[in-house]
Length: 398
Ligand SMILES: *Cc1c(COP(=O)(O)O)cnc(C)c1O
Image (cartoon, rainbow, N blue to C red):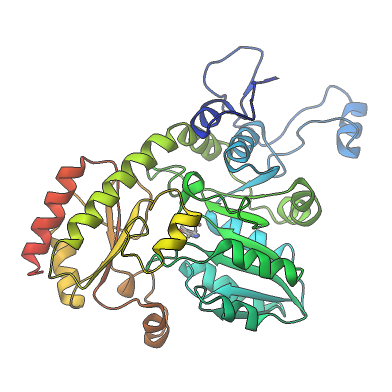
């Protein structure tokens, strides 16, 4: 195999088409799909040296695979990370990144506004293994500071958060983590690797659900953990290799090709999201519109500092559940689904779906009211989307 050229000065779009590629002896234009579990060796001696580590090469696809490796390397080039491990889902990435570095007696501090399953891992799973956890209001720096204990080893946050699109000051939390000698993990799904660079802001580890914008067309689950070579090899690799959250080569190939179109898709989706947020803000019947790319976002200043654009999600609040349901049911183009980042625009009512397992008090603390609606903006024509949303608001009496 020959490694394709990579130039560190390339802009993201160029990296996403070329970086990380490996060509076989056939000189294929597109990346090859190595749909294989295992690898064969030319001799018993070659097998022995591969296992000792004297000879470079693949051993078994649970540990590594050429197509998966191309996906990991391309993602590294975009993120500016030294190394990555791809996983079978975003939750595989989050769970591995957290659990691989903690043991009984350690403590984790996390922003309380988390993707539902991430919150379950921190709040329910970790304590089962003797790992203490504290959830804080991620927007309050003092809350992070107050939660630090001598045994705090990991900070974990999501920004923007799901579904209320609150922001956490990544650079400031990274500084607190450094003072506490802890590692900061950032779940960067909502911002996308194009619009927010957690490693540059001081985070130690970045996790993705590649299921979202990286696939972007609703086909495959996948995830990734990115960090330094040292952290990946010392903290994560053995956990990953022996517990098996590996990404299928087939899914890696789909996601690798998804990276090639990521900048074009996300730019279009973001431009529509801003236009839709602006149109929603003009409707006096809507209680509030939340979009990190608008100046009326409560943390607009922070958004400008750590995000290059507002990204592809918009949240807004109508009067109550009945009005939210009536809006969802009246939509023609936008489909009802809990997913996001898809080329198809999707609408979610968090209180009755993604966040229904939280207590009413917890939902209230997070600002997830019965009238809150989350839109994930897709690749349809912007004007068609605005017209669809406006007619549905009218039907719902907003
Ligand atoms: C979807 C999502 C996850 C989980 O990813 P899966 O691929 O569904 O396992 C984690 N964090 C965030 C912010 C997400 O949106």
